[in-house]
Length: 162
Image 1: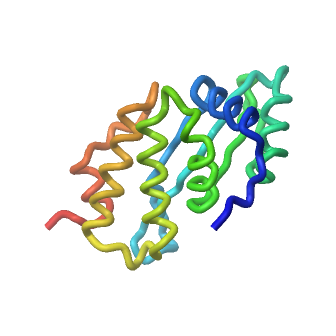
Image 2: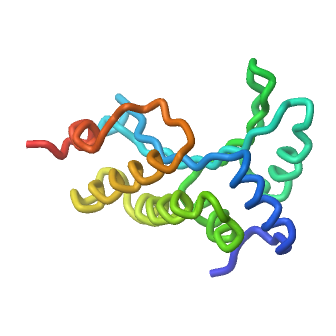
């Protein structure tokens, strides 16, 4: 299966470098009352830039044809891309060029593989435990994480404690 993104190598290298320096990879567990499990998983690539210089974000959104740009109150703009299949496909393209976020990239690709292949209600306990491990890998490698949840907390949220 080929990529739906047709991007030249120079552009991939530039975007990967931008992600390494001014981006973040996230795998979040969001509480939701409208789901059977009471939670949902969300994978995100987020690229940041001063709003006065947001042209690279607009260009990257155009290159990928996905995501949305928002302007924050602090003078920053961000390009957010969500969706397990989309994230996995983009990260597989960027992976050869990523230098500093390689652990997060590998973890998020694996999580997206699991989460795009199985409905959340049909995830096995083993798959849920693996996703928790991947959440913690990404969290540990991120520059600043506001979350104070640990493995035990995540297991409890996901119904894996006795």
